[in-house]
Image (cartoon, rainbow, N blue to C red):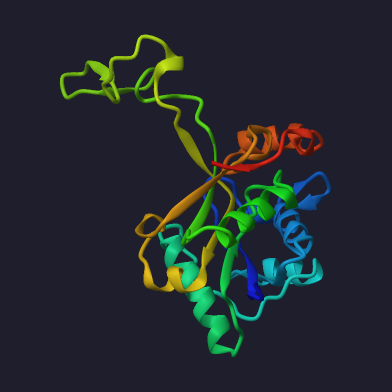
Length: 238
């Protein structure tokens, strides 16, 4: 299939949890550049675009080989701006400039341990199924049927979800959504309001590569894992 696949990295300047996290150096290069390098390594990707409101991030992105054809509007660069609207803005901005985009690929800068094969697996699933969007997941450490609780109004706690399970192994297998990659049909992103408005498929990512850096602790873990993550097992569709 001769489809135009465009990779986007969404990297705004503001971050409360970890200030300027998109430019923090991990293993000698900014988180942003880790994402750009993976995108540039994907042979099916036609263009790598960084969406940002920040001139410094834009400059780093261009020097790393990405394009920054527009600056993101301020109202879409706050910590309360819905990510889905940011995705829609990026697709519309490219199409308004005469660019063709069939497949939308988002590679958040906060997942620097991914490898190109993880993303290629996501592209394969989208292009070989009827999915509107493919997300990445990892096996959940906790299970609401067995070892997660919620607090009741009287101060007591109970299982988050009730079930007749006596062993953790008997409870349904659940997954955490990761930020390794999101791959979607561009027209679906424009017409929908959220991921689960469409047909969703998932790719299972090894835990070692599924870290999402949002805090200083996450960053320290990423620094410890960065030289080992590529040796974990392969990603696979669920």
